[in-house]
Length: 152
Image 1 (cartoon, rainbow, N blue to C red):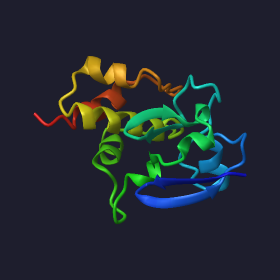
Image 2 (image 1 turned 45 degrees about the vertical axis):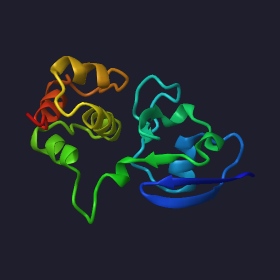
Image 3 (image 1 turned 120 degrees about the horizontal axis):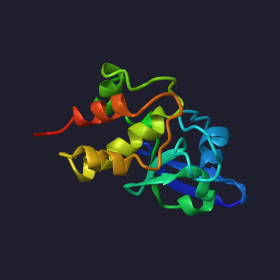
Image 4 (image 1 turned 180 degrees about the vertical axis):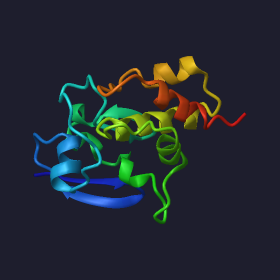
């Protein structure tokens, strides 16, 4: 098993990763970070979304060895000193959490969007979240939560 070295939620990690493991399996089964959810396993639902080197990726499609020397942020990495990230707070305040299964991926998609575009339009939000599916209800509360964080 090759040793993978990478930065996970701001901390340097070394992990002996089986060749056939995905980043999703490495996070959930190897590192016990279960905030990243396994949905479709095909990169279609976004439940397993994480931020890798500043880009939103489906962790079910990334092989563990591709993570070597990368920087990964999971939902567990957003809070600081026990304080939720402003996006997490907005999701709670706007009732956008719903069942919670898709929420980590949605929040990380929103984080990626707001880093690159602090003043998104509704269309920007729709496009940024287009790879993340919610099976509970509509996306109205999710969009409202993200739009409430606009800087202007």
